[in-house]
Length: 258
Image (cartoon, rainbow, N blue to C red; front, side):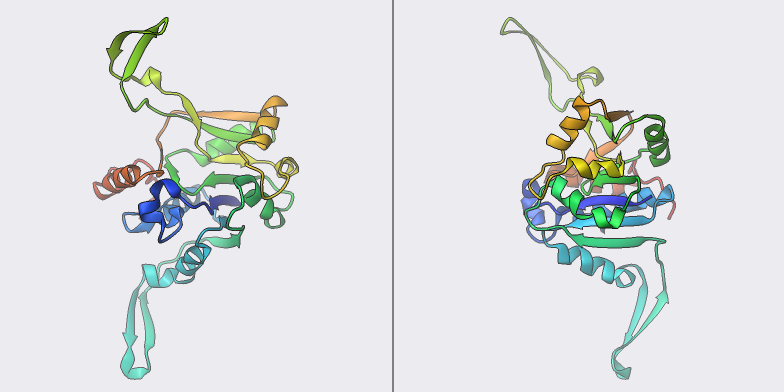
């Protein structure tokens, strides 16, 4: 089963970092968040990736092209014309297809553009800016047990701020946030049937709008309720948080072994 990762957006809400590279290439512990996402899927045996690139897509291509350089010990012998010797080779069991899905293409359009690489197969899809400790095999099992075109992971998030109790437009009290205040959001980590391509019109289609809304109205969109760890990297604050967890060896999404 192939894994599609959306990695083509501009990352405007973290522009102090993403003006140099696509947001999925921003680093946690010295590795792009894209790498972290792929390591999780790989842990469950999913190693065939399709990266939907766009903004600064060359950065993604160059990083994978030089993967050995990034992850191996190397000697450059300039006395022999710059001969390169790789001493310690570490490679993943990945197949990575990077597709330039356009600079201004919407999320649905990016998915539509990679249809030739999917064929008539069920596939996995997620966003290139969020990490989780979700069990991918359980997600796939749940999807197969339900008759739908798409299954979305509905992650529970905590309320970030304090809560106002309001009655008839009057604030009656203040209280601290609690777990019951959190709602569920689209956390990505989807399972999609190839039928999904029929719901996407063109590059202007926002996947989270008409396609998913139509599926929901037709009873073909399933929610996988997930109460584990999920965190996006939408802001500099969130990037700093993820780096802090990684550097302190407390990263909940690191489920693989080194």
